[in-house]
Structure formats: C-alpha cells, structure tokens
Length: 116
Image (tube, rainbow, N blue to C red; front, side, top):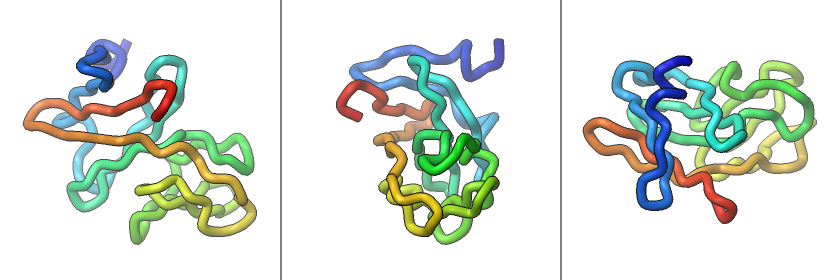
C-alpha cells in the first residue's frame, strides 16, 4: 500500500490526498479513488485532475508530456485540456472527465462523486 492508498478518506463530499511530499511542481501522479483512475497534475503550482485513461485508446495520461496546461497522450499524441478535460487534438474526439480540486496546507481534495 502506498501513501496515496493510505491517506484516502472522504471529507465533506471530497476525497483528500496528502500531496506535499509526492506531487511537487511540474509533476504528475496516478491515483485510484473509488475504482477510478485519476491523473493529478501540478502545473506551475496549480493542481488539476482528470481521468487517467485517454478517451481514444487505453493509455495513461499521467505518463504524458504536459505543456501550456495540456497533456499529450503518450500513445497517439492526442492532447487534453487539464482544466476541462476537453480533447483538443485528434485522434481523440471525446473529452475525459475533469475533477474539481482544492488544496490547503496539507491536503488535496478531489470531488469524485457521481456528479463530478
């Protein structure tokens, strides 16, 4: 069990993860929350979270290259907006889910409920 598994807990409709030690600036992290694979990105100190699996093919977006608040799928090069999950380039035509994030001094909160 890694620190992400151990620190998962529901708090007021959000799922919290301890982030300060594991997701430093300009890095990404794959987490599993409620059977969902979620890619978390720290881009210049801003935290974004989207579904980890590319909508075009079975590839992990947390392993993709990040630039201009976009992530490029490492398999076929489709780009997704980290703020909205929108597919910006082919071959992807469908968006991925984006999740609301909030950060305090110690925790990252992700809203991952049915309506997220």
